Image 1: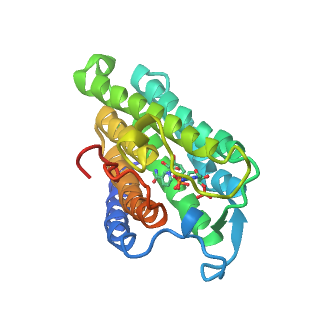
Image 2: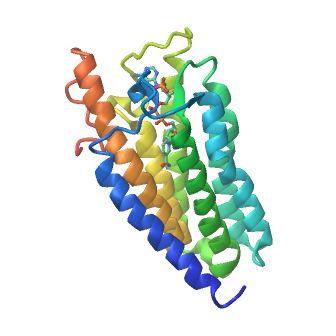
Length: 256
Ligand SMILES: NC(=O)c1ccc[n+]([C@@H]2O[C@H](COP(=O)([O-])OP(=O)(O)OC[C@H]3O[C@@H](n4cnc5c(N)ncnc54)[C@H](OP(=O)(O)O)[C@@H]3O)[C@@H](O)[C@H]2O)c1
């Protein structure tokens, strides 16, 4: 590790946090144009089928993360190995299994979103993999520390909530129609976007367990994308379904 790398690493984190703050504000004005907000008028340029799009966009989080992780000198220590396992549990599903679960979807993603997502995932994989395997120092006692245990617990609960909620949504398309329906069951009892709540809990848990600027950066970036998207989804459901459950909140049960 050169002396300059920790400075470069920190500056990449700070730059991504700045981009997250700008995105957070912008995404309340313009809903990210994929899924139900994708219009056919091609104003966002060429598009790719969602199955291929998700795979391309998320693949750096499997491949680049593994490559950077393997270059580190702490890769056989307990904490980095647990972090690696958590990350790959999420991203092997997101990049390789989730696209297959989309079935014969007709949904499309603009290429520009895929390029932005691909670039972010590459940078995010570098800052996080490099931190856990080289720049960060985790003693063998870290895995019994309450901060680590609390963080990993939040991560696992978030992963379960994200998977369960996405499964409920994907089952609504079991008849291969492109129609949207009101989701029921699981945490949809309380909020319109429990899959996003689960995803945010995962990266909050990651930030806590790794106790790092790179983890915090990823959590803020996820929240900057998912909080506005949850706002748009909630509004869309209310506008499109007169019988949408009145007590259902947007993202955080009983609060928002
Ligand atoms: N970490 C991050 O920054 C980040 C950013 C974005 C997404 N993600 C994660 O990626 C996953 C997918 O995100 P997304 O934005 O595509 O989620 P989404 O809008 O909730 O949609 C998920 C899937 O379910 C379908 N669907 C959603 N609502 C439906 C309904 N009411 N009736 C029928 N089908 C419905 C969607 O079809 P359509 O595509 O046709 O709408 C899509 O295939 C989530 O787990 C999310 O947490 C993470």
